Image (cartoon, rainbow over all chains, first blue to last red; front, side, top):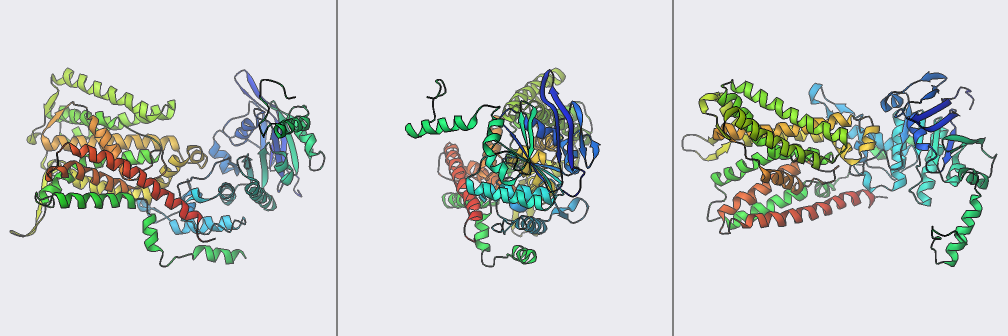
Amino acid sequence: MSDRTPVIELRKVDKSFGPIDVLHEISLKVHKGEVLCLLGDNGAGKSTLIKTLAGVHQPTRGEILLDGKPVTFTRPKQAQESGIATVHQFGGTFPLMTIGRSFFAGVEPTKGFGPFKVFDRKKANAIAVEAVQNFGITRIDDGDRLVGGLSGGERQSLAIARAVHFGARVLILDEPTAALGVKQAAHVLRIVNEAKRRGLAVIFITHQVMHAMAVGDHFAVLIRGAIAADFRKGEKTREEITDLMAGGQNMADLEAEIEGYMETHEGHPPPIAQPAE
Amino acid sequence: MTEATTTTATTSGRPGLDVLGLFRRPEIGAFAGLVLVFCFFTYFGWDRNFLSPLAAASWLNFASTIGIIAIPIGFLMIAGELDISVGAMVPAAKIILATATGFYGLDIWLGILITFSLAALVGWINGMLVVRTQVPSLIVTLATLFSVAGLTLFLSLYLTDTTQLALRDDDTRPVVEWLMGSYHTLQLGENGPTIWRGIQSSVFIWIAMAVACYYFLHHSPWGNWIFALGGDQESARNAGIPINRLKIGLFMLTAMAAALTGMCETILSNSASTTTQFTLIFNTIIAVVVGGVLLTGGFGTVAGIFFGTATLAIVQQGINYTQFDRNLSNLIIGIMLLIAVLMNDTFRKMATNWSTGKKK
């Protein structure tokens, strides 16, 4: 946070698909070594925002600045080459490939000459294992193992380690903890902290407020394509954030209602058709 | 601390575990199946010379016609796609070559070039349709299967007035005959032992192709792309792999392999017919699946496909060397396919579990 130029900045970014406006005047800044948590319910425009950052979509209006300089990405590859890496919920790894091969998919190290270049398995395995272990996942110690044998958290960590290894400066994590258990999620959150410690700018997308509060320095709540709230760590409580995400509805009350119903109805949530008692 | 962990990571050589490592290899299931089937037919075909060079030639020749196509089909399946248009591509290639060379009298090399080009075009159309429309490749290639078959029949009749074309030996060149359409025999010395007899050129093409494809899939960087593509298409795209070009390339490779088979057959038998080869479609898929390739993609080996093709050919041809009714071969193949799929499942689970278990 010493360097005051944000690594990545969005200035009044709009995105429309034909007549449908998906993003309205999104302005965000992420500094080095900072985690921005992007919160929002389903359909709030999170995915579109990520895709715009990752070069899949181009903003209709507004600009994206990388290290203070305006950039336009026409292809995802360009964004990647500029150091913007996206790690998706289940993404980045291939279950039936070995760790070494998965790690280097698309950027295989080779040895040999000309048309006789072969995949350098030993080198790939050694680098992959080292990169993951440096992130504190010591259980991965053999690059010949299949990725499918790893836990969800380990796979996610492998994907993050991969992105960092290939020079990511901006790490976009798309719901990395959504499909994970409590322990596994904690695992991933530690990795996020490690990435932050290494000076990456992290954009962490989630709808789990607890996870966001565990790692976030800066929070933005997205509702119907616009930023509804933008605040720093400690400025709002968990309940306030949840309420914001739900669009002003008193989420805590709603949750309590559902929990109450489930307790009295053998764990079944209330039926959708009729309002909860 | 970092250095300490690195050294443990890089020097995790496992002496004594190599035998276990062999069982982890994905093609072991296919190899076991091949050995089993071979032993079975050796036993039951002993009296009728199943082990003679001629019997070997009969199943090897049969295997080569499937095998040349099965390997690229296997690539496609690993990449999560399928191509059944080969059933029409083979007769199309036969007719194209016979029309160009036998009917219009073009040079055989030119005929081969034209055939390969048109096959590449069909593959490109397959690939483009799959990539652009996102329609499952089974349906896309089903459509091209019938389109190509219809077009072949129509053009054959329109241009040559017949559905059976001849390609005489003097239409071709000796070197092409030798490379693509001859029976080869290797005998050591004048009265020495026969190493092989009556082996078609396509068998050597098949073996050469298997070696080249083994290198391509398992040792070149592109092979890694194919696995990544079949494992998770979105992740592969994000990893910067040109998935569309790769897919189109694989469809083109498959169509050209089918054309190669068709041309070999035409040059060998000196004739071409428009009959669509529906059995060939199933044979290639069986060979690939028996070879341990996962139908949903992301897993498989060239060695496995090779063994799978050989197994299928031994069952199809070996039955003639036994007392069993010829018609039972399809029953055996059906059972074999089921066992192979179940076995491959088990081996694959072993491979995945191995990675979680033990050393903690």
